[in-house]
Length: 131
Length: 387
Image (cartoon, rainbow over all chains, first blue to last red; front, top):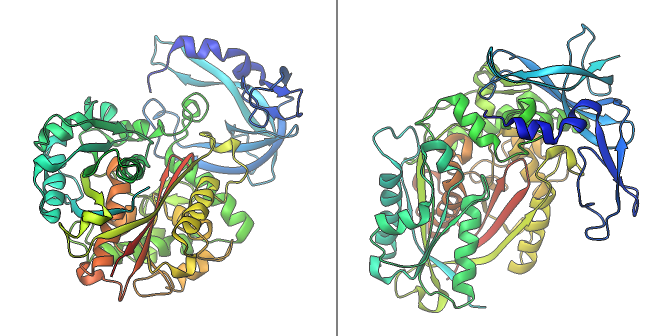
């Protein structure tokens, strides 16, 4: 997949520190952050919210037939994590030998997600580690 | 609003069509539809063409004008429609709206995708564009991966098994065996599915629809003139559509596609029918779990009960409801932009009694269910035979 350095840069705070937001009008919490609250539309009042990165596995899969650029990483486990603050977020599960199941408690850790060959950019982002 | 009828349908053979480019596929399906309607190229007022991502697959955009060009339709308005894997169903709805409103009389709706010129990895990446590029694709999530997340949750909440998912693929390959347009003419067993290569746990290769070249086309006309062209015009009794979040993680549920529930509910109301009245349905089985979820979203079975019903054969041809008689996306193939049109082509054949070895006895009312992405778009049509 062709990635753009600008795209990574635009989202870098969210990708590095799980920075989302919430709507002060209705209380809905969002990760990743959005400009418009899905409940409130143009009455949205968004403010930054940093998520703790703890939660539990809501569902998971192991990708064995990867898209372009992820060939070297496969097979890899991607899960949907229900964060303790409410939103669900997709993320890789770091293999630390602990079993991966629905309900497994996890916490976010910063890891390399993608490398553009030997001379290109290296993309970092949160992954999740069973605790 | 005028009643709208299907007066002609056409399909290409689905499969790895290495000998045919996108132009040949369009022309093959389009000509078949024009011949079926017994109508001249010069009588067409407009065309709507569904295609998901020809630019990614073969570097060709602007494909609706190309369809008009290749079919010799003259300088009519030609509009490309893109809603990921629901591009075809959405194009059909655009054509329906154009005729119903009175803006155009005779309209062609087409769908096409030329997918096998690229590698599996490139196709997987291109199809991934139907999801959220910044957050889902960035993680290396694929479409099999997204549906695997839905499958795993469905198994957790309702006890759905891998064998039950496999039963969907077995049924659809059996139906495809009787369809000369289908990509696969190979019967498979539950064990074949369970022993096939794991793609994204718990989904295996034979849980997944294939990569396919193909095109489909339909000619629409106002019902009051339809009989001029065709003895058995098929009424579009409802054409409904809904959307939802692009990103799977933002949805209310992983085990139901809300947009499909909304679109089908509105369609039943508009057509004044209930799920029990549907004789035959073509549903969006891009993965086996998707057909199980579709059966529940469309109200054919209660939540959590569809998998068992499928396993018991209740959705086989001439079962309680005949589902994916064409072979579905799994057995007939899934040229993404063509699929939504192909579904309505199959239902038209069924309602006319022209479905050959897979004919549902006495079929009078049919439904199509076309989903884009992991559920961000759903289009539902209800078709009726008019006696």
